[in-house]
Image (tube, rainbow, N blue to C red; front, top):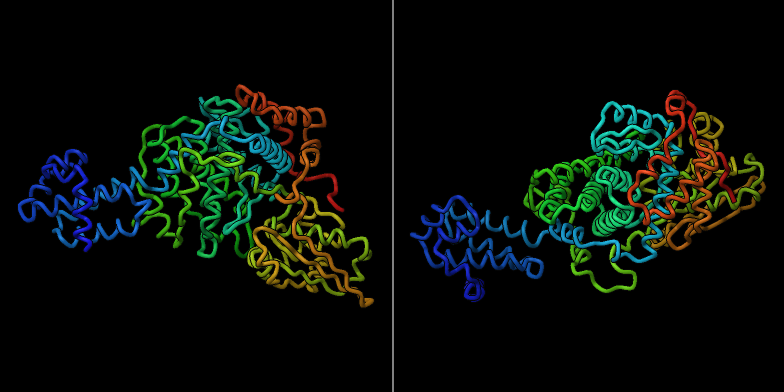
Amino acid sequence: MLIDELLEIGSRNQFRRWMPDEFAAKLKLTHASIFLSFRAKSRNPVVKILGNAAGFFDSTEVYPERAKRVERTALRMTGDGCRCAIHRQIELQLSMKTTLARQLADYSCALRFEDLSKEAVHEVRRRVLDSLGCALGAWKEEPCAIARKVASDFSAKHGSTIIGTNHKAPPDWAAFANGCAIRYFDYNDTYLSKEPAHPSDNISAALAIAESVRATGQQLVTAIALAYEVQCRLCDAASIRARGWDHVTYGTFSTALACAHLMKLDPEKTRHAVNIAGVAGAAMRQARAGELSHWKGVAFANAARHGVYSALLARAGMTGPGPIFEGQMGFEKQLGVSLGNVGEKFAVPFPKTENGPATMILRTSIKYWPAEYHSQSAIEAALSLRNEVGDPSKVKRVIIESHDAAVDIIGSEPEKWQPKTRETADHSLPYITAIALIDGEVTSKQFEPQRFKDREVWKFLQNVKVERNAELSAMYPGAVGNIVHVDLVDGRRLTKRVDYPLGHAKNPLKDPEVEEKFSALVEPMLGSDRAQKIVDLVWKLDEAKNVDELMRSIEFPNTEMIRDSSTPLGMTEARST
């Protein structure tokens, strides 16, 4: 039955009319002799099967399983030499027509600033402002200084500025150094889905290439919206952390596409940028397991560096292996996941929707407190109970009911109850909640060693328990709820539940609140006038001819003095309710 089906389809395929050597030449295969040899054995059926395989794989988006059956049938009917040729044909058709990499490339090349909604454009501005604030606030932290020192050892003719300096490093190194600063305080934005992410991590890569190629503000805004779209859609498609892979793995693809877009690469070179990014971009989840290190805060910066590098190589003509997602040794098989029909989200022409294409940024959330996002609602709940609690010594026990994702990521490992590094402390649900109750605020001060290593705090943590709540788990990721119970020594129980913390996509910060967060981070470093100038430039980002003025505005007046200082900088204003 399958053979009849193949031959029927083959009758409509012009390939079947070609002589085998001509067929090989059309496909640009060098081994024409292979076709001559199998023609002598079974001339007509093989030519027809090859024609059908070629034609059928043009339609693998519609008939993927039937196309695989075509391949298997063709292989059974041919010898070893023919099998090799068939595999080449199938790989060629996949890489050229139907792969996710091709769909992403087509989408990237088609997207224009005019396609974006006003809401999406404004949200990009907000995320750039928020990210620059996070970067400047964390500028003096140890891993940021290390990354900056390494990157500053290199210069480039068409380089990109390292934030806070006037030094132009190679774009990939600048993306790494700046990405470290954006991410390190764990204060930049968040997207929650099957795989969580911090999509503003993409901004360091986009900013680096935008400066290098002298892109306009509109082009930068479009590239950032594109990166958000790609990373968030991939996060929707499949979780990879349960299989031991880190969420930043998706960032290699999103940053490569954003950079390719800014470089104005054609679809073919863009596809190769994606392939190069993917083949060497898988990151291990150990970065977020056990006692955490600097790498937790810089893992995406490395993904961004690799994404930039991949696009630079593709621009120069380097090719990457494909199909990178669907291949025999590709992303899906090696990581043990299926991305399903995510390619449908990148259809070109763009489907007509209310907000247009590239709108995933509207579903992301800005953090109000500098801690892992799943703890944000617990912080808000604890701070709201602080006045009723009064003296922390009156607390007998704290119970945090949370959703599965929070328990698995920040509320289950023993290290969370005795944090020894900042990275562990800001990823500890028990510590973050307890310190909010004890101090009545959650700022960078709560993540300094003298605070999170305080023995009295560790003693308090012995009476903090984390429990799973099925209702909260069922609401996730639409809601990111926590319920905090505080049992007092006088027998009273105080309880507060928060499902949508301040800054969540369903409870967004207002523009003045985004500015307030930025100012609290930046004014101690640059003063109020300089901070306000940056704000003004960002709100007009889409009007800028290039990003030169913006990069100059975030240069510190005395870089060497600040570089030599070892005093950590954080938010000086308490964030409490």
